[in-house]
Image: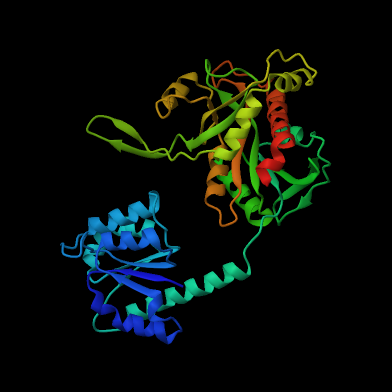
Length: 408
């Protein structure tokens, strides 16, 4: 257990340090620095379990304390490189009015904020309780480190035709079984280079990001998959992709995220997209599939129908929304959020968000959806079957060729 305290008022921590020694820590496990730059130097060299950060901190030890110096340090730890990020960060302040001014940032980037008091030990007791939690959490992590379960979890937005096409893959599927009180999955397995790859597949109870995120979170929590994939159908951007093309969503985002603001005359939607990428490992291997024209042509010819398209694999931005789009003009509006937009659908961002927000061990998320229309008034449902088939079989191609590498 290592603790770093960053506060220019170092003397006020004597009671706190005495309390830590009383619960078994040694003075050598606790470092105190008086400035943000001194904290940077320590964090660049040492991995700390807990950082206690004063909201008012000088940049240099001889400087004036300001909230911006603490916020700059928090931002660098949150988004930057070159530092060992503490597993927990505890804010501390003697002035709640100052804390309220920066409360939103500190609430987002710290564990909690403790109010220092010279007259009582409430803050000491609270901080010591936090240290106890970190100690116990570290012990639990060492003793009961969660391990991955199933190799691949697949979620579809629709039972038919999407999950139906997944279950046609020759992966030794079993009858569905209950995963919990509301979720049923089909289990399967297949061999790649002498390794048995296990897979579970299900579909969301409703279309849309919320339902997909909830179902994905349940799969992740119970099955602990190494990979979680989404197959199915989507709309494409005309001129960028063709009917039957399979799209790897990288990145995905909610194109309706933001707020509506109003001036004296007009109501304007202010966009605030949060984009989530496909993992680099998945993208690089999908790009290898993209160049295998013989294998992709075989997928098209094996469908055995009058579908006239030829499947390609296209990697690029795919936007998610909460409503079915059948107005081609709307896609042009969404293009303003990412000029390279290639597709539009209703679920992928929810699945990515569930994976990136999961506890360890986090799965690697990716989505392969095939184009069945262009989200315009002329859209038809006749291509949905082929699109569901193509996305499932590109997933098969990826996993049977590179599954061992992706998993091991």
